[in-house]
Image (cartoon, rainbow, N blue to C red; front, side, top):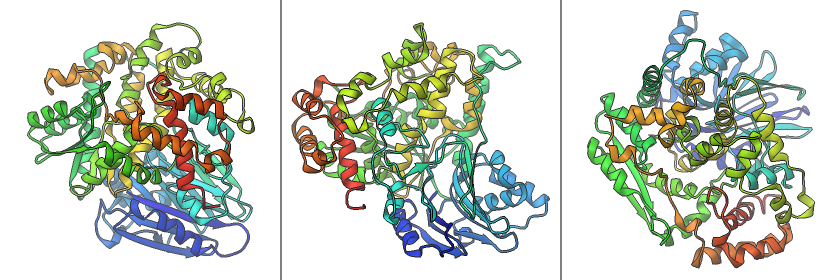
Amino acid sequence: MCGIAGELRFDGAPPDRAAVERMSARLARRGPDADGYWQAGAVAFAHRRLAIIDLTDHSRQPMVDADTGLALVFNGTIYNYPELRTTLIDLGHAFHSDGDTEVVLRAYAQWGEACVDRLHGMFAFAIWDSKRQQLFLARDRLGIKPLYFARSEKFFRFASNPQALLAAGGVDTSLDSVALHHQFSLHSVVPAPFTILKGIRKLEQGTTLTLDAAGRTTEKRYWTLHAQRPARQMDETQWTEAIHAALRTAVKKRSEIADVKVGVLLSGGLDSSLLVALLAELGVSDLMTFSVGFEDHPEEKGNEFEYSDAVADYFGTRHHQYAIPNAEVLKRLPEAVDCMAEPMVSQDVVSFYLLAEQVAQTVKVVQSGQGADEVFAGYSWHSKMAAESGPAIERLRRHYLDRDHAEFAQMIAATHQVGDVTSELLAAKFAEPFADEFIDQLLRAEATLLVTDDPVKRVDNMTMAWGLEARVPFLDHHLVELAAQMPPELKLGSGGKHVLKKIARGLLPAAVIDRPKGYFPMPALKFVRGEFLEFMRAILDSQACRQRGIYQRAYVEKLLAAPEKHLTRIQGSKLWHLALLEFWLQRNVDGTQ
């Protein structure tokens, strides 16, 4: 797990080493163990290493092979690399390291761009092929690892976060109006290729991008998700056994493929508790678990320690519990915003940031339960939408979108007014072929469009800010493909995640399985009052905010007057949405232009 960056010149000039090194410096937190730089002809690569597999210098990057004319920078983990390594040795390849980095390099040497079809894991990488004079970039199927880029007539640059590209300079930092519509409709999800800044784009998940020396590009989607019933019918018992086996394998791979200790982020909910149970089922000893909690509000508890403690006690884990006071949250909030690759409004972004800080002092790798709700229909709105009729986009709007288009038009300044681009995007996604029913369309859209830029991105950002690798077994693509074929009732039943609850029976205490859905709560960013309200007021009343002119002031004043009356359909603070974007721009963009 690492940070990667690079530049390809189109104008005949050598790469701007100072710019690439500035990018590398902004990625240092993602890879605190080592750094590297390589340059040849029109291309330069930089790498920041978090050593997880093959801790020796043999796996340092950039990795260059003179015989094949290839150079690589790679971020991620390939869980089937031992098998691929054996296959490649049988095909005549010689290895000089024991890690997965060289496997990626030699897989490209053997299979070219089709190498991605054989990689099982999370990854973002770039390969310079000097013989073809091509730069090849790839991102994993679910977009677990990030890959951003910026280009001009003179160069193409890529990096693991936008801050690195901004540090290099030459980026158009004007706001993208389409991205703004997505930002405020989909609780800060901005699907690829967009970002909030016009000059920075991101490679879509499950996609490769090839550039030649003249800057000509070819983009290919190498993976799609089919959500249709299989040819061979299966009953509930067979489905439960199949999902159990696939999930057990995913958890096992993410525990074994590491040369360091692996822990679990334990909220006490079904998903993370099931990971602990499966690791215990696999016989993993000395399991370490980690939980975080915050101050209570009258309307909502700030921690779920009663559940995480029960799971830790049940399995005898070495448990670590952290209670964070609100004063510490507000003090540390700017740091967390600095580490957001893009502005993210979810309450648990800051939770993960503060938890990861503590966890990184004990382990370098953790498993986390992100993706289970999206893949197995765990949210309350899934059953509500499934029970209704009518166009898919209307059902989604009623239960999911943060603002209708009319409200967006009242909020956003005239310079950023656009049509209802979010509804158009979602309608197109639902209309794609190979999905049998509405719920299949919905869950496929969440797994292939929304999950990447909400739970996945926030966990990657906040853990990697502390040099901590997070692994997400519920987003193993084999498991996701299997679950997508499963009949909807096996997901929607039992109040959601029916098949996971069946698997959990006998593995977990009933109180954990049957409890109301939980998460890492932070009430202070939902029920906005006191110093948190004054903090947001100061941001939105600042000269920078007024000069930027994103919002119509009447809308801002309405939210400031009664912040707790203005919540989204999924109970997020609309005031926090506005303040967070402006604060992110002040912290990450202002001063870089």
